[in-house]
Length: 226
Length: 199
Image (cartoon, rainbow over all chains, first blue to last red; front, top):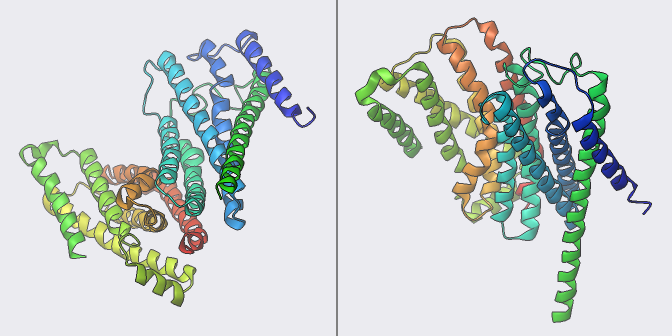
């Protein structure tokens, strides 16, 4: 129970986010109006995705320095959950865009960047699927994941800032930046981000435990058959 | 080499033939997208060969005589020369068949140079990864397209500026980002290559 305190924190924070995000008052902003509440659910998905991909890349680096199967499993499962967060982020964004911009896909630079980032990680799983040797699969996919993460940085953090975008927070639209985000919203937004990131970590650790147990079971079976 | 040149020439010729009856449809935007798609596919095909399809014996021989750093640097330099050659001859072919809407030639050449560099540096490592799998050529495309898209996005935007003959200061940021991406990709490739070379 003592080790799981952060899971309780995650649940408390998310319950707070859902209640606070839907009920607390938000500032009146033109264009976005009440949909500004998407900030509590859509934006944390991207924060979560980048955090999880970062952890995945860190474990990929650790695998290359010290090839242990566990590191490979860590890296894959964090990427897996990160991908799920990215898909959720894109879908919540599409629902929001459908009401605010009038159509789900607008070819906005941020949408393009997000879609490319997802393609990169889908390619990562395709690569894993097409290598048969376990050790080689772990090593090559670690290399690709570090490379892909490095290539993703300009895509997500630099390029969208160069272009005009209808996305809130850029091009004079109201939204997520230090001038519009008032303290009422911050009081929900920061807990929301923390909560979602913790849930992402929780999901990943669950999957990792399952994978490690499956590995152990396989080893036991192998011993028996010998 | 001759095969690649022919590949490039026939791709440009296909573009020419498909638009033959409707020459006026080739607006600058269409020209730019056709150009970059042609260059992208040619570059992927050309650089894929740098590891895929190499004989096993050659691999072992190279492994025994040279350090991985030397190998990746030489492959990257070779691919850079190859890519530059292909891009600029591609540009000449385009000029010949589809005309040349580019107003700011010098800036465009700089962009072609930087983009070829980005292609060469990132595709070298990816070709090394793809070579280890079964269906290498398909995998090469799957792995490289998402990674290369950010380079391509920048290139297309500067190309538009070149075609519209905007002031050079407008494209300054894009050029800088392109150069930064190249530097990043080259550094990461150089650091990671020893790990894929080991097997």
